[in-house]
Length: 595
Ligand SMILES: Nc1ncnc2c1ncn2[C@@H]1O[C@H](COP(=O)(O)OS(=O)(=O)O)[C@@H](OP(=O)(O)O)[C@H]1O
Image 1 (tube, rainbow, N blue to C red):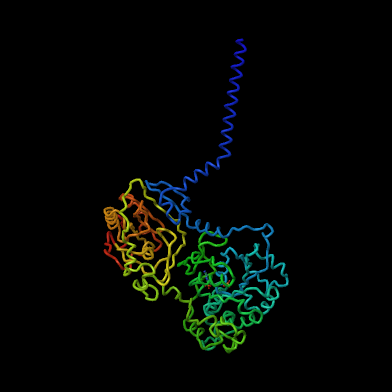
Image 2 (cartoon, rainbow, N blue to C red; image 1 turned 180 degrees about the horizontal axis):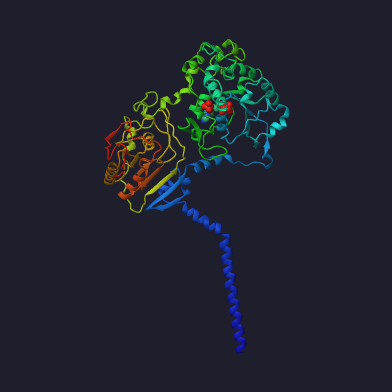
């Protein structure tokens, strides 16, 4: 009986043990299978932090990297990653597997003109997700025609239905056999032709040859017969190519003008986005390539891409594009540019060319593509009207067209600096939030004239397009961000407060900033949140806070003052609603910040 009892107890123990193991295993498997469910919950919780995280237009990027540093929440936002995310949203599409990897003959040909900006146009247009281009010049129609169309097709990139295939070889334009061959391949093909002031083009052409052969004669000697500036030598290749109409005539025998778009090489440099809009319209593409894709690199002196089909980082064209030109005798340039030398534009009588296709409006007549004086890329004059710090009533003189940003004389605009709600209470529970944008190394924002609006994606902008005239340093009744962003670029610190912020705290903030450095701006801003109605802003960074903690603010100012990409300490020109000019603290360069 006792033995029986022991057996029963043993059996019961085994059963209990088995039950425990089974339950543990069950729980374990349940956990494994629902891991994604749990992480889903976690993610959902993480999606609901406080106001500041929700109310910023950069919220999608905030998850990038958030850390606690010196009692502040620091979030690091990658601008380029964010851009990629935007791009990918239109890059991905549902495709049938059989649509993949098909190589097609070109729908679009970039036929020339050599040294007019053809590489720039190709690189810019292939940013479009619906355009795929052969990277190298294929030279099919003039060099490798005997290889046949199949060979040519294999040189093209794979495309899916709906994508355009494109190729550029600038020598197509000047080779007589090419237009008929292209027509034979595809009579409906679209043609792009970049033209540039032929004198600048000739100098660029000469520069390229000279880089390969330093024993070459001077440009002036090659361009004129007998060494005097009397007779232009139109047999010299660099000059000859500039007689665009001669070559165009051949193309227009095969293709109607509506199948050809003439792209301005000058505008491709001064305003690439505008020229790319024309190209996208001509190719029936959605206007995807915009100003956001470009930045002007002042070191290179040309627009560059913030990202492209193959690279997500900012980059310019290679070293062979945008070379320095040798110094050419001004008299030679003047002689080559003379209006009365019709041969520069046309082989004979300018009116002759109009008989080729006079039915279409887009034919510009003698000036091909337009009067040369209207664009002259030689002296960089395209940037002249936007030069910073020089008042220009047609662009920005700090007086005209101010309402584009903020009109100091319009009482309706006073809402920008007036509190319409109850005053916000400071709250120690809200830690300061520092946002650091990874500014691309070569990012150079453009100056925009007052006839163009500037808006920002960031709630508190820390970089971006701005006005050519920057603000005089000091405290303002209100200063729009389109002005103070220029000050940030010069290394200023901008202190912002919400008009409804606590008055005592506003005074404390002002005192700290005024005692720290000369290069400061103080202005209200309605973009701040009720929880953190104060902010300090430096180039590419901002610190939003609820209460005034002197050490935190001083630390931020020391870290980001003078950190803008331009080292300019001189005072600004814009003074509308300036109430107190800033005082020099150590010296004009703010050598010692927050002494
Ligand atoms: N964004 C940008 N970056 C650099 N360069 C630019 C750009 N846009 C136009 N250009 C001008 O393009 C000139 C070269 O023209 P092409 O690309 O047609 O040359 S080529 O025929 O393919 O050799 C090149 O000529 P050079 O200045 O003589 O080098 C440039 O003036």
